[in-house]
Length: 278
Image (cartoon, rainbow, N blue to C red; front, top):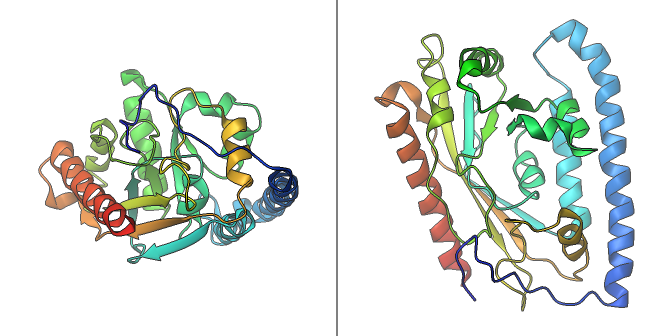
């Protein structure tokens, strides 16, 4: 079954059985304990880490990675990593299929998400995002200089900032054209010669016998309903995270050229993995 990412034709999910509801309850309780327990430890460590290290975070990123790896284990979603996360300073750009990307991308290497400012006001999720170092941006040209300064500070401190250049999540079956606006920040005078951008492809394979779009979360789909169907299966599929070669910002003429190269790498990796899974 194949549809465009924003098709009115919804994804088809199998009904949740009695055993499925038991798995939902047990996995949800385990996830709540893991996520909020990990967050409590992170905040306590950060009370010491922040005065000593400032914007640098030598300890707390390991807590986030631990939580995300084990969250995937609790859900039963196999996590495969190909390629090598870069160790130098820079940003990461990836295709965006689902809220699951938060766990999938953090499980291999600690990254800090760049998100629209509205997310900071979402109940629960906004609080978690702020606590874990998310960078919030406004779509306001008047704030562009200020936001570039924040990006520069975080990137030069070694934080891997994660952008989703598609601008929205999809059904996971294709990569949308990359928007180029945020790439301009990488070309700041004091930044462009010091950082690289690493393209990453994230590919989900649905549980056997289910809709290929099983893990995609898009359009007006409810987070709660999607979470339930994700926690219910006895046997899950997998998520493959493919790290491509980092691209030096200074090697590109402008943001459009850099965005085009990143999109090509992500799309090629995504298409190759999907073709292999068929």
